[in-house]
Length: 465
Image (tube, rainbow, N blue to C red; front, side):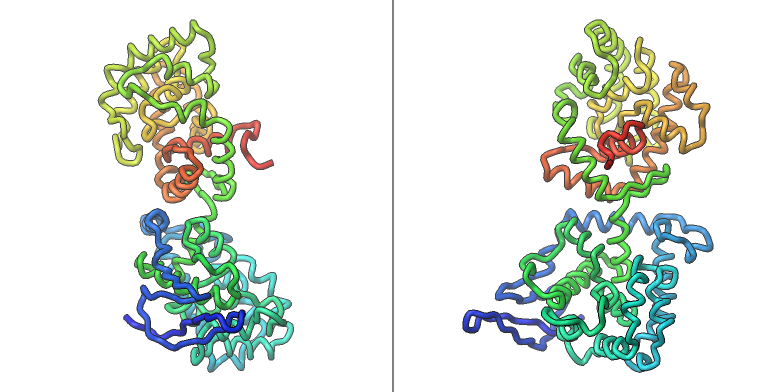
């Protein structure tokens, strides 16, 4: 479907840049010509980023609804896709008319202050702190918003008048976060939101348009809004939900109770890999269906306490004797999210492993993770303790110390771990992509296990101080 819009073209005139706006028709895949360069926003839709966003949308589709009083929640982190859509309908119904050109002359201070609060807009945090400055001169604010929603002129021209690149803004502290939120509520299908959360998320995913470093705020919005429209179209969603995804990308919220900001998770994983990756994860496994001496010796780097020659020999011979005949039942590329849904193969392998002398679940899984890196996490006492505590099953601690019941405990823990992995998979994949760019290749299973361990161990290794 074609729509009308303005494209700014920049040319060099006497050593300076001048522009003119050309009215033209365009579809969802047009080029924007800015600063003498062609910018095709569709080029930014890299497959990796789109896969992450599709994963987040699928996660929202399958999430159960949060409690009935969800609209009063302090955070939307537990909302599902239906609740996000209902929030949009409620907010547009309440405020869409208030910001229309026909009604802006009657806009009062209480209405705009109410809109800036999360409990009313159901979407944006922190806008209320701008309220006093924004509403100090209501007459000027009404004039400004009337210009903002007047579609007889291009959005770039409107924003440039409201917030010129040089000189004072029409309304103090009325910036892109509030302006584009109002545009989204008034014209939900035409204008996306550009704020700090949006910008950080787009840059994190490698979607932020190139060649706009020297553009004005108004010019940047023209390009980014085009990109947001493309993204929503490609994902089969709307701009409101797309804006929610940027917020959703900010934190890894897991069913077991952990809530780790993405910024912290990424920085923590990089710190961990820079210190420890070479001593365990980088070393390849040359015999996927056999326990080799090196598999046991390498657990020293993971604090396994298998730390002398006698112990290495004892544990290696015991594990090889117990596990070599079973390992082939689990494919080398087994994925915890898809393989062995009932965890029967896992339980059989772990039960066999813990029958070896000096081996319980922590030592067994530190060896076996090397064999099946996408299927078996290292379940040491810290990681197991987290899931035992989150399940409110203190009885499992004692059972984990018995060779007869240890595998049962490992299965119960891995079920909870798998739910965390399923819930956080799109964001864990985003972390994985960043680590790959830095030269560190870890499976999602290993990333989640490290994050759980670093978040819950008592000494605070790798956590921000």
